[in-house]
Amino acid sequence: MKNRNVTGIVVAIIYCLVLGEFLIEAPPGEAPNNPPWAYLMIPLGAIAITALFDFVIKYDFFKEKK
Image (cartoon, rainbow, N blue to C red; front, top):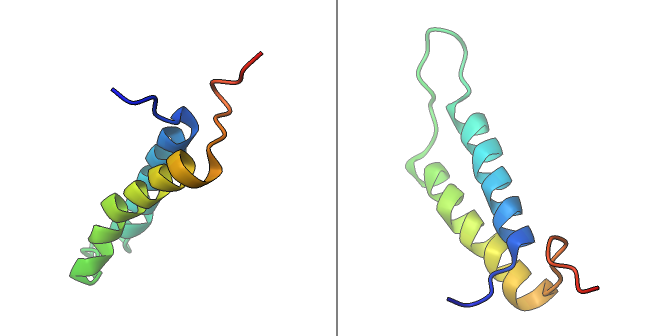
């Protein structure tokens, strides 16, 4: 397996959790009323974040070289 950027994976997981909380938030007693494409932003955003850290930034805060 390729050496993955752990920082990108951690940021993508945090992004998924926060966006999921925003999307399921609704007033008490009501169902969330979001367009269907809004839920597609969770996996697409996670892929974009990991790709950004893997190919563009290329700096890993967790695997620092001594």
